[in-house]
Length: 345
Ligand SMILES: NC(=O)c1ccc[n+]([C@@H]2O[C@H](COP(=O)([O-])OP(=O)(O)OC[C@H]3O[C@@H](n4cnc5c(N)ncnc54)[C@H](OP(=O)(O)O)[C@@H]3O)[C@@H](O)[C@H]2O)c1
Picture 1 (cartoon, protein in one colour):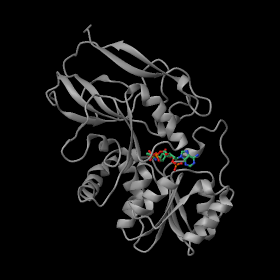
Picture 2 (cartoon, helix red, strand yellow):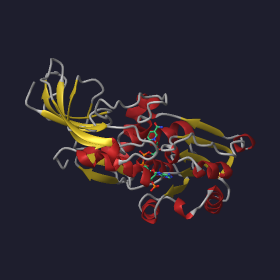
Picture 3 (cartoon, helix red, strand yellow):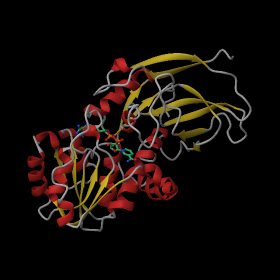
Picture 4 (tube, helix red, strand yellow):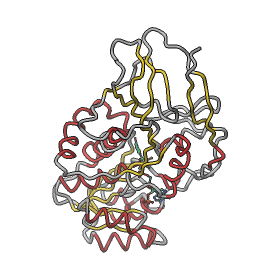
């Protein structure tokens, strides 16, 4: 054994309802010496994402296995190679991977690592606008909604990592964009910085009827595309408001992720029939083969300042549970990231 140690966040109990700080614990483990082909990584930035809540339900079969209570949590991270016995990687390389999160050091065999360049964008952007949430936004918009210039696109969770990029890409495609977010500050940013036509603070609406009325005012001819991040009253209001031939991309339903019982579906699903509308769910991993096309489209827009992004930065591994729990209270503004390493890259 080497003298080095790893700090890692463990899940100590599966949350019932909203996760709490007591469901998490930081533990210290020894780091074994590297074997041939292995790399020692230091996590610089880690991501907390809403989908992780689904991995905290051991009884629900999903597209990704549940977290174990006996192993560190895992998730997306940008890491630096510290030591390498793998000829593909050398100390100082930066990589992004769907691994490395929730811990400060980790060992990789090189699988699933993508080298990233700190000169193109801040390294943390590879967890947000240039990373998994960015690909999700781009793929849901371009592969499912396929908006045409002049059409109206409604986006919920619009000030978040995924939603904020959907809004801006839809504007670039010549659409009218209606956004929904949870505070005046978020709505102001969407309208003033991201070019959204109308941003609605959904806390001003007590129910789907009131949100439908607000949507009717913002889009009198109905909405052609709905990018769904939230579920609940947002989906019901969107279904009330769809125009003939509308498309709905089901990306996420964060409002039900902490439900103790399965949430009821929208009562107005039949509107899809009369309005010849289509609704399709997706997981980003089915579009990984398009990651390069996504990067080639979005990275230049970012470099040209045509796309804005925000981050809520938390400092240190100890803050990771707080950052994760904050996702369900709207505490993050843009992508929630945790600076694990000491670097300010
Ligand atoms: N299908 C896929 O492959 C895929 C991939 C990535 C993400 N997603 C989904 O996309 C959605 C957005 O993810 P993200 O990473 O961009 O997260 P995010 O929007 O950056 O963060 C979550 C946001 O959701 C909003 N929220 C939380 N609880 C809510 C509630 N009860 N009602 C309405 N809004 C609520 C909060 O913003 P407010 O202040 O506006 O309430 C919060 O800031 C999530 O549903 C996620 O699961 C899906």
